[in-house]
Image (spheres, rainbow, N blue to C red):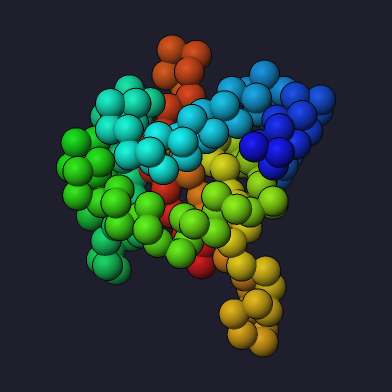
Length: 157
């Protein structure tokens, strides 16, 4: 809870500018509220809340082993994602590390899959092996009727 309050305070007091694109303080706060609610719903396995806070299609690159880089193998109907993939993600090391991470970056995307992506650092540079670039866990949020909805997730690299 302390970490969430710290993140909310930082996001509320300043707007976020990354890669030349500005995210307003209001949108930063809305995304912070969305990911806080998302993590709580995932952890408590509240499928009704997850259904309400998610888009109809969920992009999940970590749900498939396909080498295809198009959207098709990674787009899931919300029901399929919630019933067949969410539990595996919840128990994954990447998700667990993201929920404990103190390093968050918001990126304004304006893509068909996401408007803002929240990236948590899950591995520091050289943590996994000498010369390894580190890793991030990203959650996609799409703005629908003024509300940020969960729209997908990925890991980098």
